[in-house]
Image (tube, rainbow, N blue to C red):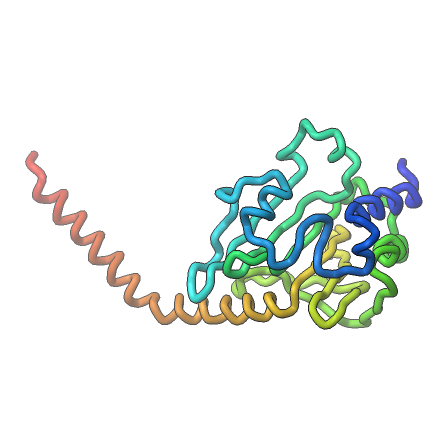
Length: 220
């Protein structure tokens, strides 16, 4: 089995894949910069913009783009990449949140302290909240919460290390300004959904009635 030290080195290498001039810069993860648009983020990850999911369309466009290494089986560098998947969230075509989930098989043996040490090499000294949880869903209907074991933040960005109930290690990084705007937009989108539900139901009923009447008029 790969040693914990080797795993720390692998994760450090992945996190430190940006130039050292950006050390302790929380405004980006790898080459993904907060505020970049969907097209640029898709190009950086080798994805297509058309693969993004639309979560809400109004009052602001909320989209998500998921990256998984199995999409790129021909890339040998991904065999040692400890990341299992990335979930990129966009508010009005600006990247505001990144969720990183590590592959449990590739991080087996790593303790919380190992991870904190690896990430602190780039982001500086971590704070250790005792009872902090964080949600990272773009839907308030299903908003998964995870316990934070360490965080790094400044006035603009927040970088949070978590270990899920399934013991999967992960990172949630977000722009505080854009995240606040996105959360407000999601709340308003859900309010509009509830408000407009009766009208949409009437429209669906009218359409069903028209289709039923059309079938009855057809000969034989």
